[in-house]
Image (cartoon, rainbow, N blue to C red; front, side, top):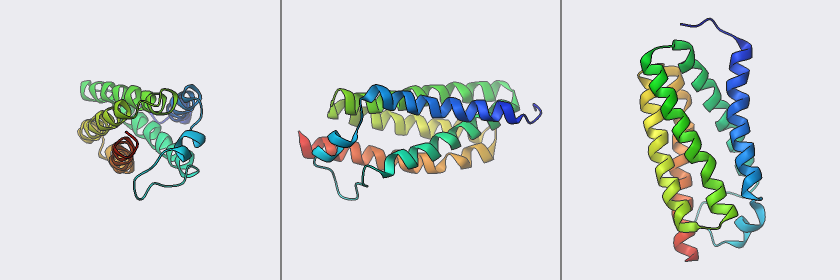
Length: 156
């Protein structure tokens, strides 16, 4: 196991946060579109999303760091799954907000849910704490898939 490094931990956290920030930047903003669309029950106000995602990206970075410290073939595979889910995550807001492709966004949300589930499973095999830290993300991804699918169905 690699020795603890605050610098490396911060690099993982900041990298995950930057993925979210860059995706938000490329999505062209969301408040106007979000407020214009008919949304399913239990849709939170737009102000909730940046707060939730900031926390979730930080947890992603911490978990990825914990897995990276293990430095095994299983950890390298788990980090590959992490990268895949991060790429899918990156694309969702662009598909939904920039292109307003609601059906495609619902499909991406379901793919993201599957990728997050796979990431949690692969992290569990390497570092259980890393996996447990991703349970809020898994729950949020399920909720996000519901919101994306519901928004598509109510606005088609």
